[in-house]
Figure 1: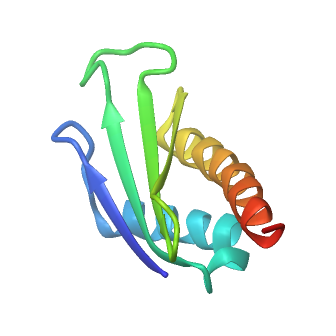
Figure 2: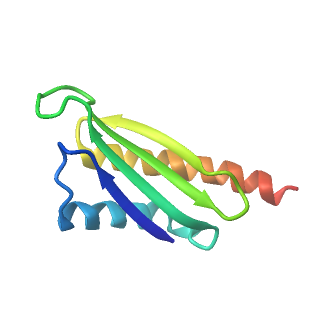
Length: 104
C-alpha cells in the first residue's frame, strides 16, 4: 500500500507531518493493505493563515484493486483531527465496498 501525502501551500509538508499521516493511515486502514494499492492524502487549510473553526480539510482517495477509486472528506479544527476523521470514514467506506464485493 503506497501512501502519498499532498498539502496546499499554507500547510508545511515536513517529515514529521508525513510520518504522522502515514502512521494514522496504516493504523486505521492497514487491514485492507492487500486490497488497497494506493492512498492519496490531500491536506488543505481553507482559511490559509487566518483562524477559524473546521478550516482544515483532509481528502483521502483510495485505489482498490478491481474497483473504482473511493474518496472521503473530513473537516476539523486541526490537521490531525481531519486525518483521523477521514481515516475512520474511509474504513467504513472500504468495509462497505469490499463487503459488497465479497457477497457477489
